[in-house]
Length: 199
Length: 199
Length: 199
Image (cartoon, rainbow over all chains, first blue to last red; front, side, top):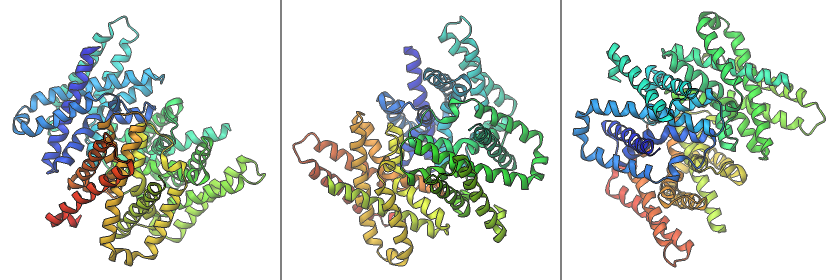
């Protein structure tokens, strides 16, 4: 499962970078930007862990998450302009991130013995609530409420993953296909409705 | 206790419908409206469970709450106009809901061994914080902070229930009278101060 | 540790008073003001306890915290004008409060076996997130995101405390020096940049 762990840390970094850049855009001080970056990266998983009773929450038990966020913050400040030019790559990474966070959140929820519908919901919460908390803290109506595709894509990916769990497909392959589902739905949505790309 | 369980599911549906209608009024997308409906319905009880350490939170252990919210969402979209005409009935149901949620939250908190003052607070939190979280997510100052009667009525109902617990009155009757207390206080408040009905 | 317990209750009162006065300033009703006062006072510690899994959260197990907040609310309403004239003293008390809350939060987090970096973060969360939740509930961008000194001072005090824990210094003295660090940093920041005093 090492590649999943690496992807998870990588997704955490990408989410943190996007949070920090949003905060800088909003003229936040460095400390505020770091908090926003961290909340964006780990807020969804933290809420999931609190709700399902898996406390202390996950990132507290593995310092690599704090290190990943720290590196992300430093990279954000050093390569601020450069990262903004990489918007397309960032979008790709971000979509990989929400796909992965959905499946990992789903698995963790099933792992504590909760039902599939609850696990699907917690998968979506893991993927999107970091952004919701970020938006609440910066006093904006959360994006998720204005653009349905984000959460819907996660839900669809989660359902695909649950479906494959009844097959003999290798779990890693099932995870890959599920993440691809999230990415394709989101990509198609943006292709066919350009207003969404202005989010 | 079956009628209490039925009332609880019914209260959940009413809260969810009121949340969805608020979201539709705010031109939220369907996914956003569903999230707002769910948060309004189970947000208060979820916060209570997290604070008193009863995790996984209650609705995760009984799929009927998810089903109740799903039905509420469907009803909201089908009978949107009709429900708005039923404003008076909705108000009645909503008041039954906050009365019931107050007493159930109070009982659950006492059940984990916490003190009466804490249980009274958690009763009020169960009843009103779904609405608070809804307002925070939709970027408005929570109603509860502008109109004191809502929380005060819950607190009064909770105190009445605690008082009866020292008597020989049948618990179900005590619960009925406590819920009636919440309803009467809220009704009188609105009767005597019409500005509150504009909430 | 009795003097620390007394200071803790005292800090809770000061935070509650500052919360209530903010709410009155915002023309909140009494019930709303009480909620804001309570959230400001215990919100940070509550969030810390939820995240590290120490539930039911701390103030639920010791009614003195509810009493302290109750007294604070009453004092706020009786001496409203008088307290506002005591702005300088309030600032002093408030700074003592955040220094103390930082160290107590840090200690509690270490006490459940979590690492020093996590404990430092939870110390800062204990001290500043009551104010963040207050600002979110009153629909403002949290102060902490606009003024970096507040959180930075807490972090510095926490690091000093951790440093002393490797020395033979008496813990109470280490705590005193750490709190003084928070106070001095905050004082110097305000002395040298008056715009911060307008918070």
